[in-house]
Image (tube, rainbow, N blue to C red; front, side):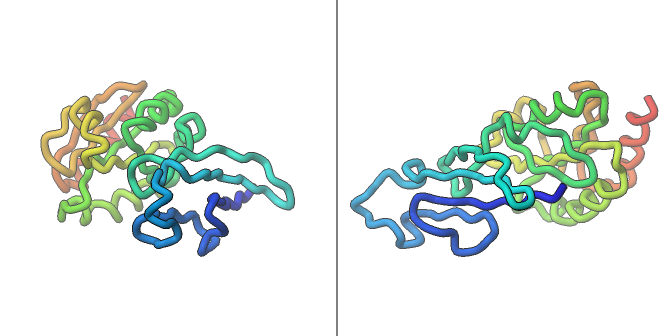
Length: 187
């Protein structure tokens, strides 16, 4: 079943059919006198399948430029792709993975080796359909989870099984990462 996502906002139609956000101070759609910022906007995510609407999910606006769907809607372990996680969605997704192996790429936007590994990690996710591939931007918002997972350098790859970290690979070491995943899958 194919799904089409559409986003509506209280300040009028979206500028494109894709999900978009509006930063009130930057886009000029809100006078400075209104105040309230992103948190005052009403947003919803409509999931449409075929000719009829299947669900309307409220969207929380965080202090950042993006809106996120409630954690209960996001806590699904998906294979065949890399899923971006944050401090709120990581553990629920790991729990939903059940006995599947989970590989977490812990990266930063400014890290050169992280940028080199990203397309290779994506390719691995498309080939290895029985493993859940996740990525976590170790920015200030996710600092608590990065600290909880004991990250010291980026990129760091954590391999989890049954909700527990069982292997770690640090640095842009593709062959070592592939070997570690195979070892965990066979154990």
